[in-house]
Length: 391
Image 1 (cartoon, rainbow, N blue to C red):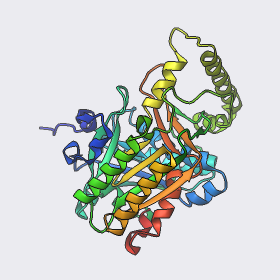
Image 2: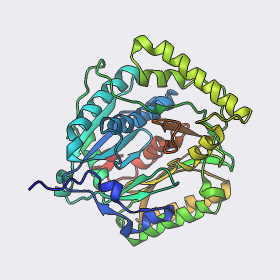
Image 3: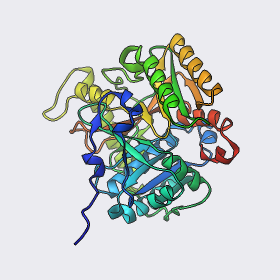
């Protein structure tokens, strides 16, 4: 008799709606033993960001999620966006399709964005064989989307192995294009309203991920929650549409072959103008309301996450930022955590919108001048030598 499929593991996972739940171990369940972690990151992302290619870096990271989820028929699978990289947990039934998607997106990023994307597919058996685990929680910031939170040290181990050259998925020729349907980058950077946009990464220190680290995470969340909407960097009504076409070229390259890109870019430009007009004059169509879309956009954004550590891109004033930094420094001195932090004046949004007519579109938030990649660089020097390659 065949074993029952566990493909719907994440879909069946009970969710929580308050972000404080990331510190509750009861919210996490172990990923099935036969699943795999599809993981990727940009080589030398900080150099690319310093050269002004921050939109391309974020687009490359989000393209991994888009390619793998599309290859798996947009099923409900756990994933995490990391700014200059991403991961997706996939069942064994989708392993070969995920491998092909990683290979195709690696070739596409190299050809179209001129970035070196590392990709790997790491079995859970290898992760647990080294004494690590991948436990998954389901956080629902709105009624329409859920994001996965990861604990157990397994995703960090998988990333270190990829950077060491293990479990690598080699790129396909550029002519084999990934399915990046829904990937878009149409919004201008979103300016800070409270003070600064701050990207924070805090990972367990020598003391491990026990109660002291959990308390640290709870404290940082509580401080940021003292500001309106938990220091959300996107206004509650969403970003204001602008007649800006800077992301249209990257999006066109993601969606169609070179011969059709001029036409596709014109279509994207026309859509940008249409949304601007609908929003400006408060016009609704039979199937689309720009103001509802913008509010959903804000509610569905992933500005906070947990992936073997706390990651946040928040809009904070100087007083709250000083308190956050003081708490992090105290915890670091006590061996509870290591942290990296990067300040900037705006946030950047990269989107996965299979169809704007549905309300389950997803939006990935990072700092607009390096964000998580720069925070990781600040963190890198604080890690033990044997783990330094894992950032």
